[in-house]
Length: 167
Image 1 (cartoon, rainbow, N blue to C red):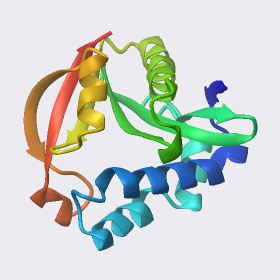
Image 2: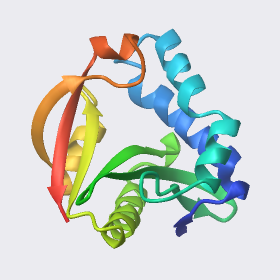
Image 3: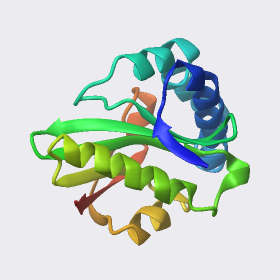
Image 4: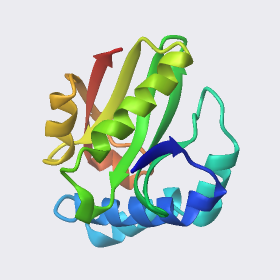
């Protein structure tokens, strides 16, 4: 398994992992049509191609876990303040959980963001996400506060839990 910054060759794998991961993670939390709306908003080939080719401090690009030629995990985010970063997305192939892939992706992301000057790392986790919450808490993230969901008007009726970690 390799952890590396994503390039154009990884776009289809990122789309697949993020779409399948989204469906699996949120199947019991969101209506199916809302899940598909989110996937169409954030995980299209065109958008992902832009996000792997146009990177900088505000969006560091995707970091992927690749097993052979297959993308089995992806994460990404960027700086939200001079000393703070936000992990916007992390998904794994649903059949590849509990293998340490998420831990390795988080390590690589944290290293990237520390190089940009981040001293704090933020993440939002959907209230009721019984996969994400224990993962982030085990990695040293501490609950800060609740806020309305992000992405669309429909998202605002859901609650995100904000976690922070010093790096």
